[in-house]
Image 1 (tube, rainbow over the protein chains, first blue to last red):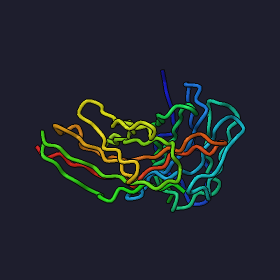
Image 2: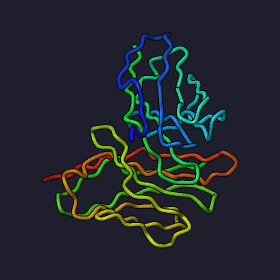
Image 3: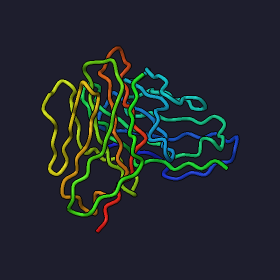
Length: 112
Length: 117
């Protein structure tokens, strides 16, 4: 069972470039979310989704877009990368009525 | 908005001893879930233990146990017989119940635990 798969694991972008971080889960979980982790800041919620076609903003949504066209996939788009978006990004999923969140292995993104 | 506070950024413990990590949270809800996650240097987020707010009994998982004080909004983690493999970042997290699609998982800033041999 693959669980939550994030790609890529590492990425370097130039300021102004765009890219998509991929997240896929094979557990048929309804709830998916994206976090960024910065030193001393913990994990901060960027966007989340409670099902296909439904997304909402978290704590730090600016500069990021998401969509949820299928239950399995929840990509995170950076439209115009900025150095402030240098971070480690985590995708997580869970059944809506369950409690445990399953995490991907993270993507380390550097914007230069 | 719900918030989670971990006031100690770093702690250390001697191998085989006991350490307690503190966490407080703020919420107006009566039904919710609390978690402790561990993040070793591999970066993987690992669930250590969870507590349902409606349960008065404190959760335990082998060497890990919690002290859940609902009225005080406190949720501390006790690690007994500390092992070198317990060295990691520890995050306290709060999950609101599913209500109209507003379910969220909110984390504290984390605490770095060092285990000394």
